[in-house]
Image 1 (cartoon, one colour):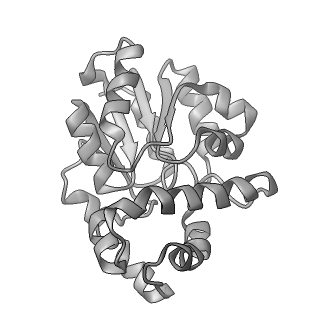
Image 2 (image 1 turned 120 degrees about the vertical axis):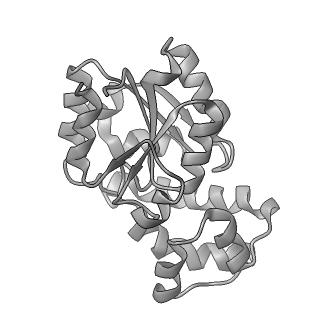
Length: 211
């Protein structure tokens, strides 16, 4: 089926920010007093849900907003230098979906400023709504807001993301979840939450506009 509204997560879905995340993780761990990880551990943690990752590194829930802010601030400092790329093909795909009449939006725990900077002015303008800066566990209310303001039936909206928390947020907001295979969590992990759609490569997102 096609969708009238495609809501995108940002990190790991539109933007290839995993290498940057790894490059700053241990500095943020030192800053906020949780455990460092090496490259091998980080790769294993991709199979964990966010709460399990927090337990593994010894981060209590109350520290999450502070650690997230540190990540956002570090990204803000480098987005102008082009260090955070979009995944291959994302630009043309967003343009094609817009031309096909799919309404585009972003719901991300990252800052709107960072999202717009990485997208660039042209692609950023294609996004009709931005809901950014919330906790990774607080996306459901923002997704519901996007759907309501878009005047779109929930059955015709899909939240596209790369984490099991994205699936949970979509379900709690009453819409379907589309899992991407190129993000932070491996697709095998996302299949456990039974996504309504699965995208093996960015080009597969074009199916959102096909009947």
